[in-house]
Image 1 (spheres, rainbow over the protein chains, first blue to last red):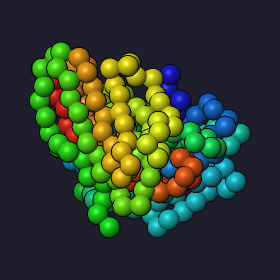
Image 2 (tube, rainbow over the protein chains, first blue to last red):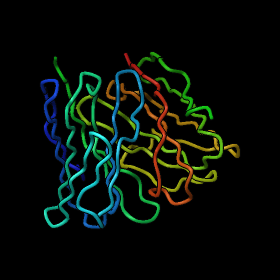
Image 3 (cartoon, rainbow over the protein chains, first blue to last red):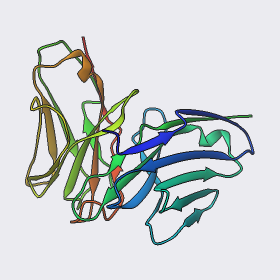
Image 4 (tube, each protein chain N blue to C red):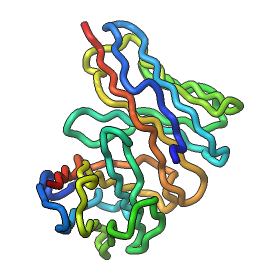
Length: 112
Length: 115
C-alpha cells in the first residue's frame, strides 16, 4: 500500500525553468513532510521539510507548498540548473516513533 | 563528524545464499533505520532500531532481519536470497529519541545483486 503517491516519475526541464513535483497522502496523522534529493551513487539527503502548521516554506530556490485540506504537497525548484538533476523523493511521517514513508521518486533532468 | 558508513558497498550473491550488511551511524546517533531501494518501488522501510531494540518494522518477510549493538552499529541479514532481493540497501541514522523529529542521514548504500 503506497501511503505517499508521487508524480511525475520523470521530468525534463529547461535550464532556468521551474520544476514542479507533486505528492499526495492519505493518512491524516502525518505531520512531517520532508523532501530528499539523491544523486547517482549517493544516499538521499534532506533538502527541505515542512509541518502542517504552515502552507509554504522557502529555502533559496526550493519551495514546499502544502495543502492540508487536499492532503497534497509539492516541491517547486525555481531557476532550475543542470546541477539540480537528481532523483527527488517526498516523504511523510506521523507523530511519535513512526517511520518515514517515501514516495517512489521523481527523476529530474535539467537540460541546457 | 564522519557520515553514515555502510559495508560492503557492492556484493553479488546467488539464490538461496544469505547476506549480512553493516552500518555505522553518525557518532552520537542512537536510531538506525534500513530501507530497500529499487527502481520500481522507491524507498521501502525495512526496520528501525533504537538503543538495541527494534522500534518499527516494515512489511517484509521474516527472511529480513536486523540487530543493533551497544555502540549503535547495526547489521541487517537476508536469508535464502531471492532474485527480487536485488536492490540498494540504505541505512540511515537519526539523533533524536523520537523517530520523526529530525533529519535522516543516509549512507551511500550496499548494492546487492542476486544471481
